[in-house]
Length: 229
Image: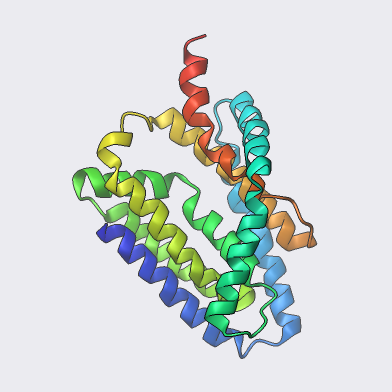
């Protein structure tokens, strides 16, 4: 858990610094920086999504994941969580970007091979180098995310703590399941969701990315099954 804890603290520290910078940035500049960040988020998503080795896996994952997520209505539950955290942490002060900051940063920080492989290395071998490197990247990006998206970015540290911490603690049991092909496809599907987040930020659209979150885990079933046929 050491690597995950370092990653969590880095995000919180970056968020704190970003919030300090936010106060000195005029609204017009903030909107311009937001658009620039949105383009960067899209780039992160594209660079990960094109690494898929099985396009059909991505398609099936998005369809099945979308059906599951819509049935549970994850998007609505995430909005409720963001609103609840906003009320408790901001003591009634309104921040229209709080939930967006939480969801955006959580996806960017949790989706990807570094989060999975780094957590497994941390849990199996006590090697925290990958997560420490990820912590540096996440900490720096948290500064820029928080300066435009606000305090919600800091809440993503909790998502990182739970997600990466669970992988690290359960690494011995899930290592045989999370093979390289599965991790690659999980990362590709997650990167496609990151593109959706970037488009939401850029065009102020409302793609239901939250309802598509289960798609990330569908490759865990699809890849082994496809290998049988």
